[in-house]
Amino acid sequence: MKKNDLILIGGLLIIAFTILVGQRLWQKNNTTSGAEVVVVIDGKEYERLPLNQDASKEIQLSDGQLNILQIKDGEAFISEANCPDKICEKHHPISYNGQSIVCLPHKLVVSIDGGKEMEVDTIAQ
Amino acid sequence: MKLNTKKVAYLGMLIALAFVLSYVEVLLPLNIGIPGAKIGLANIVTVVALYTIGAKNSLILSIVRVILVGLTFGNFAMMLYSAAGALLSFTMMYFGRRSKKLSIMGVSVLGGVFHNVGQIIVAIFAMETSQLIYYLPVLVIIGTISGAVIGILSGMICKRVKVALS
Image 1 (tube, each protein chain N blue to C red):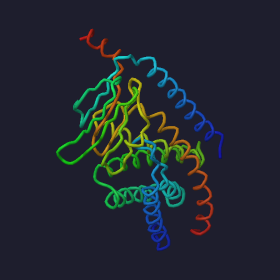
Image 2 (cartoon, rainbow over the protein chains, first blue to last red; image 1 turned 90 degrees about the vertical axis):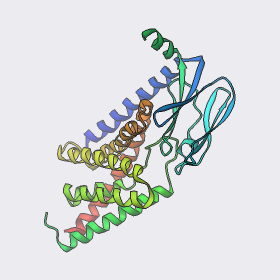
Image 3 (tube, helix red, strand yellow; image 1 turned 45 degrees about the vertical axis):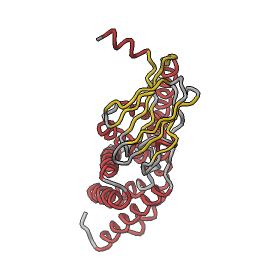
Image 4 (cartoon, rainbow over the protein chains, first blue to last red; image 1 turned 120 degrees about the vertical axis):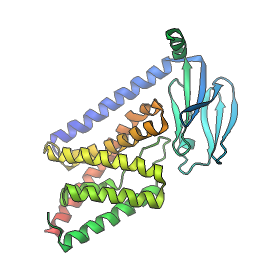
């Protein structure tokens, strides 16, 4: 092992951890009480639900793909899916602006829209 | 490098090994809810190949592995993701090795990190969502750690294989 290897490994880890911590702080500070859960399928918005209301939603498409989205205590998660890899089911519940759960085989993205960004966008438009 | 019988057999053996390791990874997925996160066991074979039979042969090995594994365990979309990961990772490892500034360990870390990065880039385009970019730091951390472990293993394997090949 050369010195450069350690610099590479250390550098990558430090940069990644710094960005990760910054990301978390930004996400936390940009989440308002009006945050919404946005479901996007294949690049198109499918549904918007308020994050502060408990709900259970079956997202079923004609080709048999199924994801069950649950919102509970201000957190959203996928409780069940019939995709092959089940990565979306294993994702921890999301609650902050910009966080997302992705189901690659179903081209489904569930993300949190914190609300604050939206206002800025409307003003800009 | 001229391909003699010994080298042909060796290349065939590496492809078989890469195939089996990919299968092991299908059986034991690193399922933490993040698409594209992989231990990258099959990367051991690519690293060993790069250091023992040259860049051209290891590129062929990578491509054959991606096609074989994609046809057997996945679908076309999965094949596309792993092809992007494998090609980007191979390119970075090739230049990493050629620069002579890194040992096998650093080269393997580059491979691990860029395999994950390549997959997420394709996923961003395929899903038409930039949300996935938020996973990049976690993927870099996973890639660095798995790359380091694989680098150590590959170093040990290379030493023994070089004796057998010469």
